[in-house]
Length: 284
Length: 277
Image (tube, rainbow over all chains, first blue to last red; front, side, top):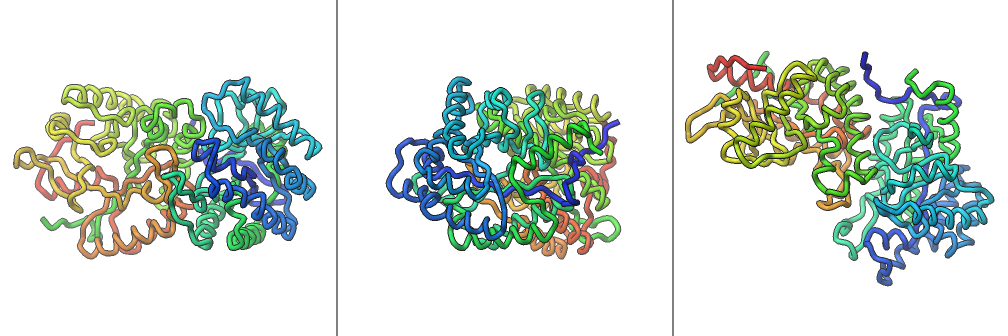
């Protein structure tokens, strides 16, 4: 008998209504390089990408500290090499560092040896700063190479936060990796990215209140459903502008006041894995 | 012709969906069959969006039409069978979101699709919405020969109207559509060519729709939707859609399937069609 399944029936700790992850992709100038498809970009585009490490990151970190929040930063290995002090500052504040490529590489058919080399190199760099092996994977540029899940399992990863097939956290079979899905309308890139170097993204910015409403409507509906996750995917170079961080802080306060459990991807993934080990992953 | 709607309703409103799911991605770029993220976005349609949409329709006591690519029904049969069992209608939308170039090829494709839906749900589609809005000269004759009772393809008119062949009216009702009621113009985001990256909020989308039905209801006309579950089934857009259908009820719209509206129109025109399912 088929029953309609709109979630996996998970319940969150302390009676919370929804698990929220306010995640950051700290990809600096690599983001523009990947979007435009060039290793070498012009001065303006490079400089705009560097708004992340040079300006936006500090605002994000200050806000997270005011809100007493620990969260997850997906950091390409190259960024940690180039900006070791910034990435050390992220880790020192208690945030989780997770894998996001070495050079923000994004290829469907990435050879497995090449991706594993990227992981080995980046894990080493992140571990030196973070003190532990990263356990989270987010494919750069909304892309998951076909070899990735197998490599995650082999290298002891706990979760992936890249796919977009539902609004609940689930376990990949057979790898047992937890998926924490993302979605373009919960990604600041969709609203705030702009570059004349790429025709597809010559668009204008959105008012912050307009984006707040879109996120709020998604949050409210999911919180009512009760067994869902809400993963914001943000970039210090985009959300880090003064007006946008203020909007984000207001939204975090709204989610807190409305039953959100806001924490790192790792903590949610560990909870999900344990919950499903007991429940067998079936709807309750 | 001035149409009248059952029970003195102010207008006819078809909440129609196109279930393209994975085929939307498979047909727009060859790399997508190996692109896990794009395939996961297509899967969202049957895994997450349809359960959410069907729950909302049930709570609101409404029936809708789902123009369903038969490939999707083959790879996700349970949800499609469930939807049919709930009394929603399945309309024709190709096998893999494709349109054939000749009468014979298209007829063979429709045979294949009819077989799949008869096997899964006990009946075949009796209405057509062509994938990508592509139509050839032979289509009207083909539909007539196959006992199709409605089409939702034209955009030249608010409808409904009856199709004709060489000026001769045929018993196929046209229930037109338009970009203004296609959710992808507001809620689809992709940087893959053909790019579509200007997201609008759910609240703004349904404000546009409410303004449109408020005016159409005064004229006693109809409106037929083109909604894609993988986008409008997102929580924020679904929330907006729910508020829209409540508004439509308030203005006394007749919310019905395409098939129900087509039958009503045919009866008003004096046709007595025996539909073969």
